[in-house]
Image 1 (cartoon, rainbow, N blue to C red):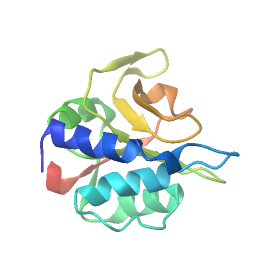
Image 2 (image 1 turned 90 degrees about the vertical axis):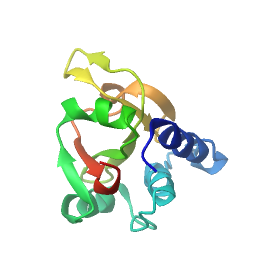
Image 3 (image 1 turned 120 degrees about the vertical axis):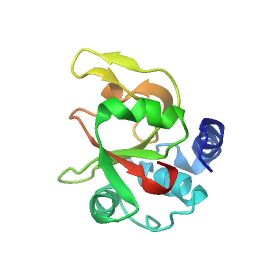
Image 4 (image 1 turned 45 degrees about the horizontal axis):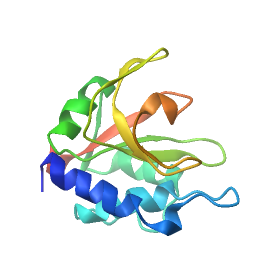
Length: 143
């Protein structure tokens, strides 16, 4: 499955789960990213937290680091891309979604994302989700 409509379906199907709504400071970015990735056949994030997912992405042969400036075009073509950052307590991960490139005062042109966290959103630029520029990984089977 490598087309933007299939990617959007996976993003929206997982996004609409009521259990992924933030409540009492508990967020579910890890579970959301896991569900989207499982729909593409990658099942190694189950039960992992965001920092753990970033570690797996960094070293797993099915994932490759890519530059931010390539993310939007690849997602628009159906490639599965995860943005993530490790932080001391809890990191954050999200999915780059098909859409239009956004403009950020901090980072210039940035990709659109689907993020489950403090605020659940689809289509905002990553500059609205991350305080520090995250890393980006593409699932090689969709690249």
